[in-house]
Length: 385
Image 1 (cartoon, rainbow, N blue to C red):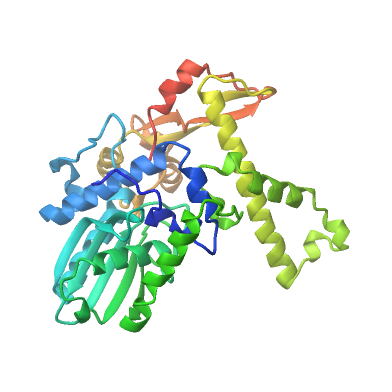
Image 2 (cartoon, rainbow, N blue to C red; image 1 turned 135 degrees about the vertical axis):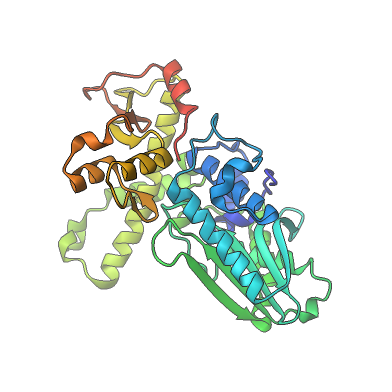
């Protein structure tokens, strides 16, 4: 897998596009990439999917695969839910390829322009039917990603299109997002005809021109989420403070009485404010984790939760102990759920461990003991998926 990133990457085009925040590309270029547990997990499961498509293995066969980043030092053992999600992606591509044969590209680097390029998860070009399919796998569960008019997939489609020798044969383009863990429909498709597809390159050129302008403006909006510049963005700060200072009483409307467009407008403004203040909290947490001081606050361990030591081992032993269905597909049931179901707290003995889910920043008045910065550094080296 290619680990490099373009300055104007397809994955962040929704943010630096002309109709979003063109100046974000300029500002984000000032910051280094900082892997987190979500990006680390995403890298691992994309690599697993790639290896499976290339070798014919299924996700459950992951121990047999030589995955570049390994498992253990940076990654915990994949869960049943993780592997089931990857398998949905594999099954869908294999089904589509069998139903509509063609050329399969896996983790293919595509170049749309000098500064706009990326790696497409998978693509199938079927010359006999004139159908080009672009696939994007999303392992995350936190944010549902729509497929219709998805700028990232539009860019990938244009990049893959440029690799086809007989481009005139492309009659339809179908973008496919496979995101099994976010709820809703796991496989989402959006198909357009050739005429509409051929309008996409001009959209991309417009966005690249806007983001490349030296005075590209900063425009706060829903795209600020995950922007590396958010904690230091003056435009976002000003918009957030204006929102925070707004008093609904000035509108003579209590929040519980908001209706229709007024309610929708208030939600949009609240989202911008929440994005900024979350970025502030994340920035403060990062300072504390690196040993810096945040007045009135301290690093503490999150409250511990019980979890299976090994999901695979737990499922096998629970079946032997009389639990017929240890899985609430695709996840294994929680220790508490199993105990409640069988009415025996002892059934999970020697199968669970109580662990903190990580660190958090709390007020000095919090009863939990502070975690020293050296211990925080050790803790951060063990992300959970």
